[in-house]
Length: 256
Ligand code: 13P
Image 1 (cartoon, helix red, strand yellow):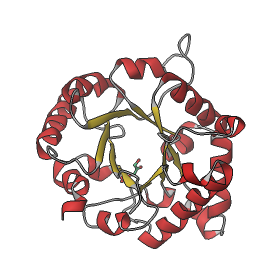
Image 2: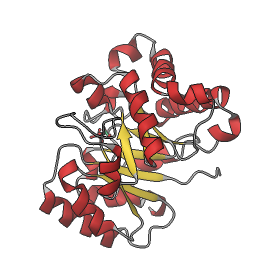
Image 3: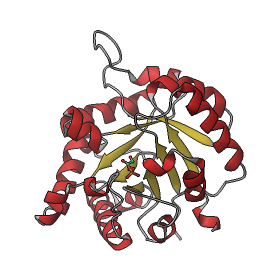
């Protein structure tokens, strides 16, 4: 057993209006009451953050945002700052999701800035990395992951240290929303690689504390075998996080 607390996080993406989000948050509060062995987080769309934050206040469910800008404020139409997320009740923020990278042109350099800004503001980042199918089939998975880590953590690398609260999420792009989960062995191989890299780059004691979540078609029927792997510390769930009937069993995977 390691000392890392498992985390199950739901990324709602661009789904659920305020009323739907509130109804769902209330259901989750009820149905996950008593779950103490696992951290639970939901990341609703920006418009529902505040309302969901108020509903979850004082509960064990953490509130995360799906993105943010690195600037503190100013003329950045359409963007949201770190302090605005704190103001809405967020403790966490997802950064560098593959949909942000591929559909909205986010680069490692931008993600590096966001990571620094999130930490400075006191938000816990969930930094996403992952290879495409083409990269995997070309035998470049580890090179791609290493480059994403090096470039999106440039600021942290300069300081030579990293807060142990930072969460990483390995999300192979080919497994997101496709129904194709990485096998537990494929996921473990990359998670192990990431932890070794953290150990080499920062220090092994820190690497042992960092939580690395897996994301990509996580469902109630594959969560347990993924969580059984040594370096898989949780899941970042998309589609299956939108319904209590699929998200609750994932949260309660340890009890099934
Ligand atoms: P799915 O669980 O729908 O594959 O999405 C994964 C994801 O992108 C979570 O951030």
